[in-house]
Image (cartoon, rainbow, N blue to C red; front, side):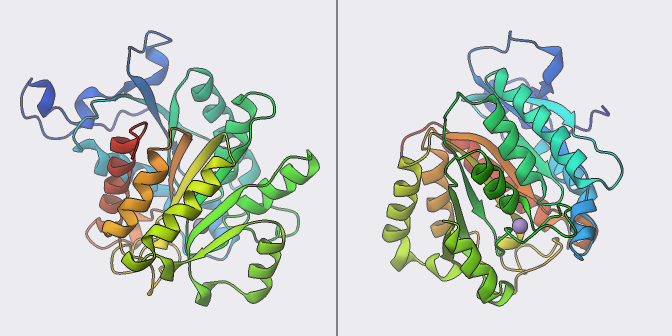
Length: 317
Ligand SMILES: [Mn+2]
């Protein structure tokens, strides 16, 4: 793996360290990973699923841009940082990418780490989830909380996965294995989802929360909804599709949302509630497409979201 972690250096003071100074290769430190629970970066450098979904390509370069944007974040005090490199796939074969990611996620979970997946097309969400399930205790309920403008529960295209199908795949697997399907979508945009999709997702048990719920006046009831969801799962895969944010905040995505949510205090309160639940088994940021970005703001937003999550992991709210 090419080591891309570099940035500012404010001297040896432990309180002045940044990500690039403390992050280490994951495989170079087997087990002796210290007292801090590890967060382990895994890149998902493909937009094959985006192209198969007729989206604008560019997310293939998302992991590199997100690593660069995270490099100068203040080093976490509660977690050690590692980079496990990138998932890989057979060309544009989306399922092979998902399985590669799943294997990497399972390995990180087996080492008591929390994977931090940097994407990449949102098809990564299925690899994230299935890798978590495989490493979890038998019978553990692994839910998905997904900030997204879209319900990525669309049907396979000629039997093939793409960036719009990950939660369809989660649901299909859960049904085939007689397991509960726990999926909550936060920030849905009515203009970008057909009534048929809303109906089929709701019928399958998806919990869909409209972007309009991200409002200070709705915060308390939204927190209640989230607490109820969290109480019904053992672990949660937290998935941030950057297109949940307004196009002004996140232009560098395949499908920008003109009326997306703001990365404001209400959003951050909701995010911290999930992160501090103690149930987050994995984190992913999806759909960062640097070639579509303006001045790197989407990658920087992704990094700021990651920073907000990492600061709250394991800290009760
Ligand atoms: Mn998505």
